[in-house]
Amino acid sequence: MTTIPESMVGIVGQLRAAIAQLESAERAWPKALDAAHSRSEPPEVAKMEELLHSATHETASELAFTLWHLESLLLRVSLRDRFKIFTASQFDRVVQQGWSTALVQELAKEHPSVSLIELSELIKELWSEWQRLPRAPQPAHG
Image 1: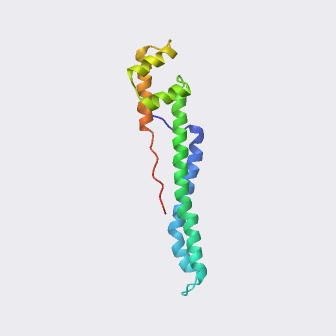
Image 2: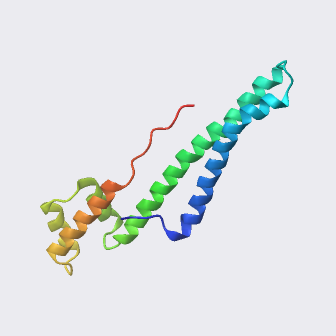
Image 3: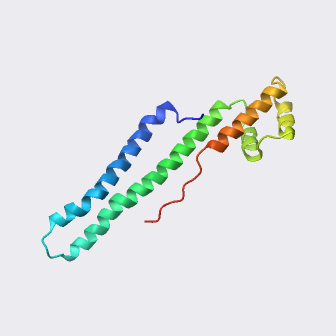
């Protein structure tokens, strides 16, 4: 299974923590804002609500979507590293076409030192791993 490189785990964790902090602030600000002004509602309150919503909900949503993209790219880089026997174009052909006898035979010409059985298994494994990578979430419209 492909995982995020160890060198990036801390960064990803920090970004997840930032999302959690923003979500916590999003839950807390309505009560705090109510307590911050008197019973009358000055016109500034509506603008503050708008700004707080943007600063918390919208920022957390955008950061979560950006983090998903980052993690996806990290997983893809990690997968390419694991299958470095393939050039970038060979790798791309495998993930676009999937396993086929024709592809195995074609790549065997470029990898004469690798047995057909081993090459076939590498192609199947790469294709399988690629298919298990997360697919893009739909962005939330908030």
